[in-house]
Amino acid sequence: MGRCMASPRPSDSPADVTIVHDAAAFKPPKGEAGVSSMVVIYGEFLGRRYEINGAPLTVGRSPECAIQLTDDSVSRLHCRASPGDDGVVLVDLNSTNGTYVNGTTVSARHLRDGDRVQVGRSIFKFLMGSNIEQAYHEEIYRLKTTDGLTGANNKRSFDEEMQREFHRFLRYGRPLVLVMLDIDHFKKVNDTFGHLAGDRVLSELGRLIGGMVRTEDTFSRYGGEEFALLLPEMGLDDGIRFAERLRADIAAARFEFDGMTIPVTISGGVAGAHADMTGPDKFVAAADELLYAAKHNGRNRIEPQIEG
Image 1: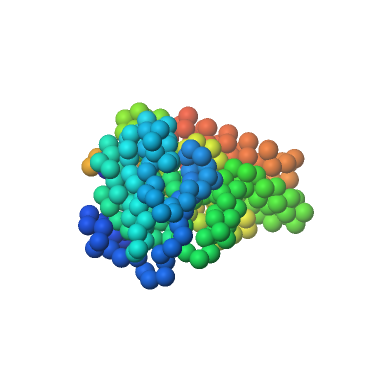
Image 2: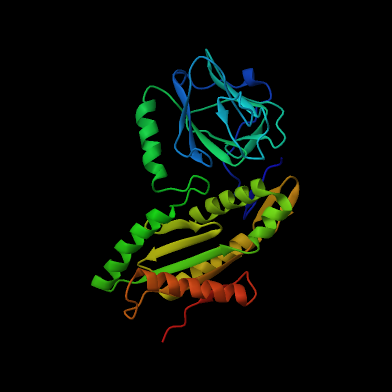
């Protein structure tokens, strides 16, 4: 299985990741060795923790594996995390679809605290160090608000933030914009390249959009391939320009998987909150209706709310 990476500009490459074919060539920083765990942050067994203590931890579809996954894209014996004196080494066991660390396929490498390990459609976060219990509970808390695949807020977190911001709008009359986005023909991506490629497109899209939003904005995975952007203190015209810039950057980005380029575009609807809306549901419905119109009118476009 190949790598899927989106980059709107040549200089916008993801953070460098060391690929190690000789595990002994890469040593973890001193002081990181010791107790370690793998925590599921996306996919099967969300939130479950697996300790790596003494014996190797094998991941695969076989009942013999310490972490047994039922995903068809996971090999019978997929990969193994082995503890040693100098840390934990993750080794791919000649799997069909590859083992990924921080988005890069690896054959073997030492794991560092915070590394994201993807096996099939499941993503694990590797934790190690003296404060591992605290780190685990912080990760579980984060999973309550964050989508593990895209890094965006989840639907529950979006709903809570929407309630706060909409009532703030009603009380103080401050400008508020909602952008609803959807990946065009996403089913075709899954059907043509497979669900692993689809997951990687979602992950890279989350990285791209997440890098463009302000601190005060709420960027959420609303469901499936649909995303929502809640933009407080932004007028409708500025919200439309921002959404159009997002659309253009994503259309210009390169999404690659297994040596082939995946065409990725988005459609969006942009609505501004106004006094006639009786609640957040009406606000979401307005932006969603505009999103539907963008798809109906040809896709790869932003449909704006017409004021007045």
